[in-house]
Length: 228
Image 1 (cartoon, rainbow, N blue to C red):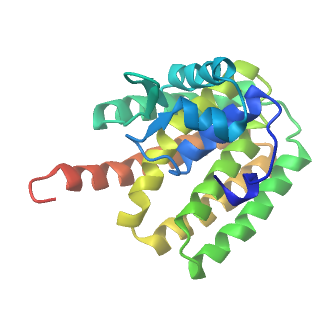
Image 2 (image 1 turned 30 degrees about the vertical axis):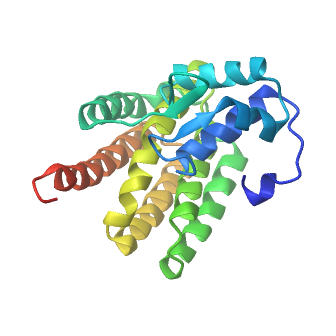
C-alpha cells in the first residue's frame, strides 16, 4: 500500500476505483500482475460485492481482465493496440477545442504552472514514479478544462490505457530529453491556454501525442527485434 494511504479509511467504491486506477497508471501494478479479490477486500475493508463492481469497471476500461478463480490481471498492450489507441487519442486531441469553453479556468493555468516548476526539478532527480505522477496530474488539470463530460471521460480513459506503457519505456529513453520535452510541452500548453487559442491547443496536444507515440514505438521495436 502507498505510504500516504496507510491508516486511511476508504468510504466509497469510487475512491477505491481511483486508487487502483492510479496504481495501474503509475506501474505500482505492472502489466500481467494478478490482483486477489480477497487481498484487496481486506486492504480496503470492503466486501467483495462492491469491490467486484470496481474491478468490473476497470475491466470495462481495458485496464484489467478477469482470470480464473478470484484473480484479476492487469492488462498488457501490444503494438497494434497501442497504435490504435494513439490514433483515436490524436484525433480527439485535435478536436478538443469543440469541448472547451472560454475563459480557461484560472485553476487550470495555475496547476500547469506548478507542475512546470516541479518538472524542472526532475533534471537533478531521476524519479520515474514522480515523472509519471506529474504526467498524470497534467492530464487531470487539462481534463478539468473540458466542459463536455463525455469528451472528458474518453480523454481520461485513453490516457490511462496508454500512459503506463509510456512510463514503462522511460528507463530505456534519454532521461534528460524526456524531462526537457515535458518542460517544453508544459510551457507551450500554458502559453496557448493563456491566449485562449483553443485550436492551437488542439493541434499542440495532437502533435505531443504523435511525438510520444514515435518515442514509444522505437523502444518497442528495439525490444521486439531479434537480440533486442
